[in-house]
Length: 317
Image (cartoon, rainbow, N blue to C red; front, side):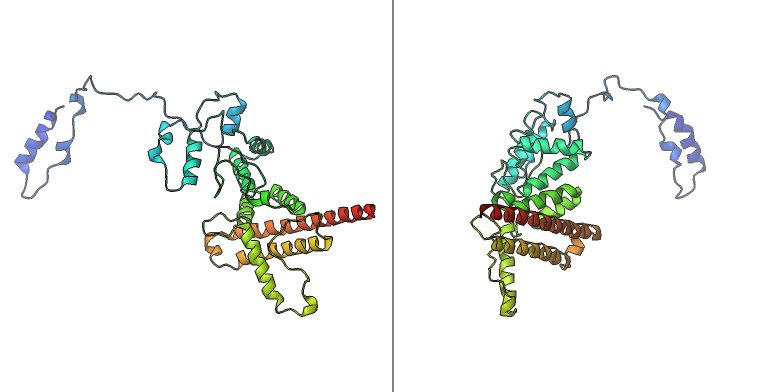
């Protein structure tokens, strides 16, 4: 590489320069005509195949197209290197391990219900992303078995569904039916807001059972200020399971208490000023609307439940 063509510029500058003058920028420009390329220089191949990453959004279609089942969803080997993982949380460690080793052949593993659920909502027109995260919310509520699926982690729950959370531990058919009907009618944002308001997943959050027990204590405290004739003869302990050994009157007491609980949950959320920092007004409205729909569905289902029980009781007499 040469700069000899700039010599005249420099010579003229020396003849005419004044004190404290500055060299013209042209002196430093390179004459590209005199550049000799190094024949041994490494030239990057523009056609070099880039590392392909497969994200949520293509899995369902690729499975339908018959992609090789041994293909990793995350094709970058680095993701499967333990040094990239956060190992401080054993639960998250296991989810990360399973997700980074997921292939098209084992991504759903034994979670047939989970896989069918995603496929159903994709066929309905939801994006694969929304269908998977809808399934995630249903699974977190104990309304969908997630088995050993590796496609998405279930918040605050272990890899490999133990079925010891949410509706897995609740025997209340009218409530379960109402919850499913409500979730099916909502968009993904509303689904997530409702589920994680009922089944909090933070480390410092109360479980659904604890929330019910706390509400029972609240009712007992309120009862102290009620006239005796207005007080319920039943005490709510937080247990919302029902069975045929219970009187229909007591079962309806549980139903009525649950409706009060739902109203209390949404009012507590709305009256918490911190939520107006964490959530948009639209999200708060969505949560309130989701509770309203849940309450109406629950009222409808308890009415049907009572009618069926009354018919059965009449038949048994």
